Length: 430
Image 1 (cartoon, rainbow, N blue to C red):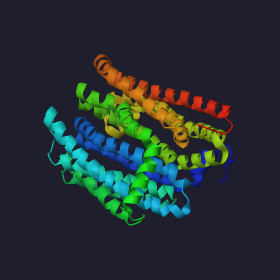
Image 2: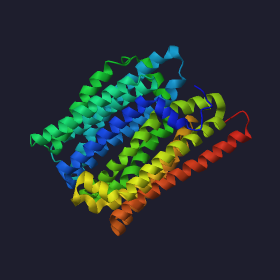
Image 3: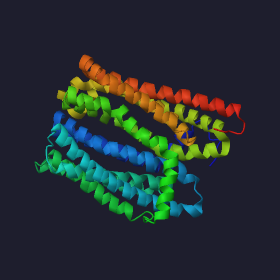
């Protein structure tokens, strides 16, 4: 890799990595269409309930990514070629065991929640279907990231194109059969991920459950992710507590409105997900060959180039918010267009957080990420009830904005402190 890329590095890399961009476009486009179909066919309240239940999957995913896939993206490229097969085989086994454990915890969690709080599930079968989806989704996410780390880009594309075909056609089929219910939607999603995982399993290193390898991988990833693991819970609280509290205080329709806005903003995830799959590898290589100065120059260049794309998209969405909502979801949803504008503002901070976290993860200084989310979670827990009761949906949006602002400020001050530490110590001691 040439470490002196031109000023348009990000655009060049996205262009030369057209397969990566295409894959992210397929995935984001499928999720986008899925959100539209669910909102239209389920109605905003049931769609809001779907979103609340889907947070169980996102909660489990945050832990899986913290302990398995994020360390893999940064550590995988640095492992010697002769050791890679052993590393990925053992990691594959760890992922399968972690997914099984997640299933058991999710089922127990649902039973306890229903027993203690008296929550009524629309269907008792969802107590098992949603944990099953959690297992399948974690494995699916691992397979995709595995292929990216090894540069086998055709397989994520194949898997995600099949995902698009199966899921969208399946949802339309349910509608035509007049069987579009919450339970059937979740069953369809589980079936789709099961088929995709069979394909992924056949194309990667077979899992190695040897105790020695498992212990080595667990220790290695724990050392890297010891702060990220704790951060997963805090990150989830930062990003979702206001939404969950909003569902309880404002009703599931409020959650549905938030998900409608997030679905439209999700178009930017084409860039965010491409960054997640491309940047950590190149950031690690820059740091290895040029130190912290090379890493910072690389991430600064990335921020300017990718940020220009994000800014144009968010401004365009804000200007045409009412038209977008009416066109995609129907006239009855136009009253929620201000929620979409609010999320455009929030996502400016979401973008800023990406290069900051890339820097911290590459430096293996993940404690500031933990601290940032801690302060954000504390703010969410302390202020959500007051803000939601006093200002309703505006309180929800304002609360989400402030939690993002808190975390980004912590990252920024931490990186400035780390930079000064490197400058004062020529040997680069952290």
